[in-house]
Amino acid sequence: MSIKTCDLAITGGTVIDGTGKPRFEADLAVSGDRIVALGDITAFRAQRTLDASGRIVAPGFIDAHTHDDNLLLRRPDMAPKTSQGVTSVVVGNCGVSLAPIAMDRAPPPPMDLLGGREDYHFASVADYAARLKATPPATNVAMLVGHSTLRVGAMDDLARPARPNEMDCMAERLDEGMKAGAIGLSTGLFYPTNSAAPTEEVIALAKIAAAHGGIYTTHMRDEHDGVETSLDETFRIGREAKIPIVISHHKVAGVKNFGRSKATLAKIEAARATQTIGLDVYPYIAGSTVLLDTLIPGAARVIITWSKARPEMAGRELSTIAKDWGVEPLEAAKRLQPAGAIYFMMDEADVRRIIAYPHSMIGSDGLPHDERPHPRLWGTFPRVLGHYARDVGLLTLEDAVHRMTGLTARTFGFKDRGELRVGAAADIVVFDAATIAARADFDHPLEPAAGIDHVIVNGEAVWQEGRATGARPGLVLRRAGG
Ligand code: ZN
Ligand code: CU
Image (cartoon, protein in one colour):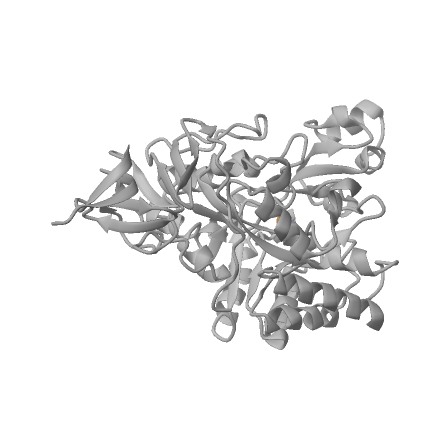
């Protein structure tokens, strides 16, 4: 037998390969950025060996839904994500992307979730991608072009549909973005920057993304009472633009909509027969975004995550602040603006039903620039694996891993990722199935996960022994086979 060399051997572990199939004992060999052997690796002599005895070896997790556009630049170690085993992130969600726009004024909410005017200086997606290549982050990244970003860049008044010349401008920038490697278009039709766009405006832009083999992701117009109408609109956009769709952070919000996920999932399942539909979900009954009057009445609790006007209020409940100030909650909210908040507005049974739905991907929707962020930023993936899979038994560990790896890679067209097999990219996480847990919670939102031993991106360790290694092997991922 001829002995070959490899850079890294991971031995003694139990492999969950990302396809959803049952775990198996296997060793794994990595050379450069690729997996070169899986199973019997006795033909290889490794430069370095990781002992994974008693541990699970899985594909690195793909965060299907993020707002990490600026985190990749500001904090390239990406610790909120790598600490959970995440090796790739999809940015530009909910209609908000850092590129393409060079901002000459303060970004209107919700664009301020990514940063201030000084952060929005990438006039093209090519500029942003070039910056990611010049100063790479620890994780891989796939870029969506946000509809709000396009609208803010092209229109002087966002409270109306785009005019033909504005459509031309948006179309041109989106086309440039797709050519520069963006994987598709995102909308946030719920938000004030996006909500005046009629369905036809979205379809016209989605057709451009489709022409480049792209995908369409959407924070729908209504996740409350009108959630089913919004699903119909989303399906129509997919059909008319002939584009695969992803429903972002699927939820049914507001007390009177509790239980409606039965209807929404049935509707999605039925539509899947005739078009390509994906969805993502985060494992919490609370949502988070900018502080919006429209979301306050439907929420059982509102916690302030940041406030420009009153920074010291971050972490406090809106109702307590209002009481202290002797005003109504809506008046208190006005005085805190611009601001962000966490809203307890979902039912646990709906959240579980959506997570258990076999086509749901896991996405954090984390907001990395918030003073006191929703714990989903640091806790999403270990919470699904530790709490919902192991402790609650809502899904098998194999299935849970599949929804954060293989399914996600297939949905977004990340060839050679999301599965452990010979020839695949060496994005790997080694974790302890017995101890993996989210330690971030609403009182301590910045705690790294427990039970994550090693996180490897393109063959390089980015997180081990509870800290970032400093390596930055992240690549810009393109969508294949669109
Ligand atoms: Zn959203
Ligand atoms: Cu989002």
